[in-house]
Every structure is written in structure tokens, then in C-alpha cells.
Amino acid sequence: MKYDVFLSYRRKGGFETAKHLFDLLTKDGYKVCLDLDTLREGDFDKALLARIDDCQDFILIVDSHAFERSVNPDFDPQKDWLRQELAYALAKGKNIVPVLLAGAVFPDNLPPDICQIAHKHGPSYSMEYFDSFYNKLKKFLHTKRALIRKTWLLSVLAILIIVGGGLLLYLTKNRPESQEHGDSSATEPETTIFQEPQSPSAQESVQTPEFTTTESSADISNKLNNSIINSNNAKSIVNQVSPTTSVAYNQVISGKVGQYNYVDLGLSVMWATCNLGSSKPSDSGQFFSWGEVTSKPDYTWITYTLLIDGTNKDNARFKKYNIDNNSGIVDNLFKLETTDDAAYVIWRDKWRMPTKEEFDELVINCTWKWTKVDGVPGYVITSKKRGFESNSIFLPAAGYYQKKNVQKNGERGCYWSSSLGNYSHSAVYLGFNSSTERTYNDERYIGRSIRPVCEK
Image (tube, rainbow, N blue to C red; front, side, top):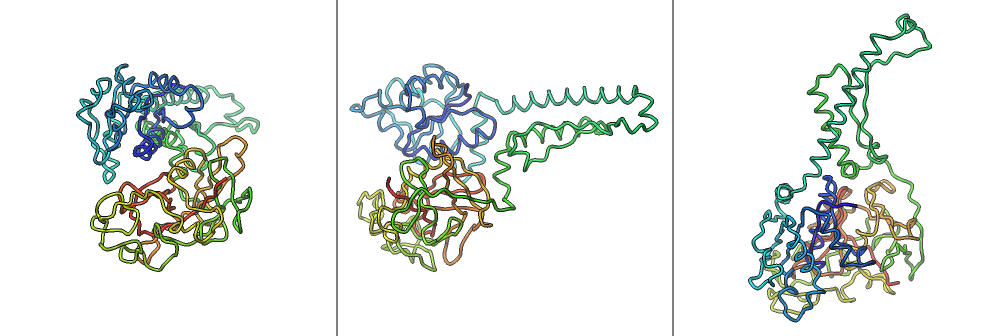
């Protein structure tokens, strides 16, 4: 398979952005190489370099720690894969587009093989104005794959319509006499209809326009263009349409720990069949602030039990889980202790909250289908691992709690991990809607769902 774009990043600090860009660029028609663990199963270095050779464009995700290994004289350069990828892309003259995340800069002491990256330019990254950033990013790319495909397909369709129209006119003028007198053994075509081929999933939600010989060429061109755009974005459209009917969901139960069932998806941990505080997959369950082990009626910074003082993320100070100096207590605890892990405290045994890495594993190694179960919107998540393809879990889009109200119920799912975020005030959660699923950082006080996991 030939690729258009290569995404390079650090696992820690850059994966979320890289995965998000991978999803968007793929939907827009680009063939994107995202360095995932599947490449490590073979000859890792040769596979990566071959894929860089394929691509015109090389996007480098730069977080604030991206070059720490590269500038460390004691770190083996052969084990610094970001450096190896970047050096190879520079040597091959690829179009390199750096994306600098918040707080990221190019160090002054970059080694000679990658120092030229400091002279490369890319769009200014902004989560707040992400759409504007993404549109600018595509302008930096040399590959115009999506446009080429649409233009080519538009030309082919236009030729087919012209040929079809000419054939219809010929048949109309030269039809047999029996048809002119209404012979029931022959049927007369009333119009020429051309339907663009679609995948089965797209046919359920994307209506292909009909093109008739009575329409103007401008109307035909507009409909063709809309049809092509719909076809290229079929997956996105299917995901964004709210499901109208529930599916019959038959979950395979792999086993039980204590009183609670789990499903083996072939991943590093077993996933519970329902949310904490619920009794079946489609129930929302209870909501928890990060690091708290009981639900409550009001979710604010003031009601957050691990807070020392403060009213917002900029001045909040915490009793535990501090990686900066705001609280005056730097304990460098990056993961919840068992006493603060609601899944462990409530279910006990081997149950606990999933880590960020385990959520990322779930996103990468499973197929996510937006649907309804028992009338509840959410994702049926099915394993792609060999031997586990019939195993799945359902995550309801239960929304989240702020103050005394549930927000976005039926539209979004928000599930806490046990991992602290990039700053003391934030923690990592899995967030999804009908078109996107990935991990994010957000304030610890917000009430979110928990889906427990257990060790194998």
C-alpha cells in the first residue's frame, strides 16, 4: 500500500493529536501512515523507513518533551525513533510540516542530523480553533490526494452521463414501432439515472442523487460534486447521524471476577460488561470526580474532596497528585492509588479503573460502531484481534456531570482513566461522540462515567 502522509510523534505527549489527525486526514481521502504497534511485529526500522519513502508529506507532532531524548548525549540515537524518522525524512527531501503543541519549541542544541527542522514551518496549532488549524495544515501538504480523486471521479461520471444521454436520445429516435403503439412487451425508459457506487454502510445513510437528461449541466455538476463528497465522507456521515432504532445486542461473556462479568477482547486487560454503578451494558451508572470513590449531587471545584483551596484550574491546589508547584506539594503521583480508585474500592478483587494506555489500546484495536442498545445511544466496540472478533462491549453515551446537571446525555461518552493529565488540575478521560473517539485531558472535578477493567 502506498501512503501520502507519514505522522511522526512521541507516544507520550503526541499520540492523541496524531490519532486525531490520522482520522481526519483519512476521512478526507489521504492515505496516512500512523506508526502503531503493528509495525513492531516485524522488522520495525525497515518497515518505517519504507513507508517514509512512499510519502510526499511528513507531519511531525512536537510536544514540550519531544526532543528530550534527541538532545541527551547519553541516550542511544538508534533507539530514538522520532529522531531516526525525522533524520531520514530530511535526508530524503520530504515535505516536512511541524505541528508544535502548547509549550513546544525547538531546542537550540539539536543534533546535526535533525537541526534543519528548526527552519521548517507549519500552521499554528490551536485546540480552541482546531478547524482553522486543520484547514491550514492541509494547505501545507504537497499531496492533494482528496482533490485529485474527486476531480477524477467527477470527470468519469460526467463522461458516463453524456454517453448515457446520447444513448437515450438514440434509442428514443430509433425505437421500434411496437413501442410507439404501446406494446406491453417492451418498456420505455422515462429518464436516465446514474447512481454512484457506495459501500453498504454508506447506502443506509447517504442518498445518491438522481441525474436526468432534463437537468442543466450546472445542476448535474453540483449534484455530482455533492455525491462525491458524500461518498468520500460516508463513514463520517454514518457516524454523525443519530441512530433511530436499537440493535439486538448479544454480548459474549468471557468470565466473572467476584460478582461482575467481563469480556476478553484479546487486549492487555479484561473489560467489564457495564459501567460502575449499573447492572446492564446500556445503563449510565454513577458519575464520579477523578480520585473520588462516591458519587454526589453537585460537581464543582468547591465540592471536590481532593482540593485544598481555589476556584478554577489556574489557582486550584490539591492534597494529592501534583506534578507542578501550584499546591506546594510535588508528589509526582501520575496514577490513582487504590484508595482513590473508585472501581477498586467499590468492586474490589482485581477490578480497577483503566489507564490512558489501555483506553488507547481499546481505540486502536477495536471497531467502533455508533448505534443504540435498549434505546440508548453509544458505541458497540468489537475486537479486531484474531480469535476474539465476536467479543464486544457497549459504552453508553451517558454524558457528564457539571454542578447539578447532566450534560450531553445521549450525545457524548466520557469515561475516566486512572491517569493524571499534563497538569495537576487535569486527568485523562476517554471521550467520544458519534464521529470521534479518543483520549483527552480535563478538570478533575467533573463527574464522569467509569468502566472498570481487571487484570488477566
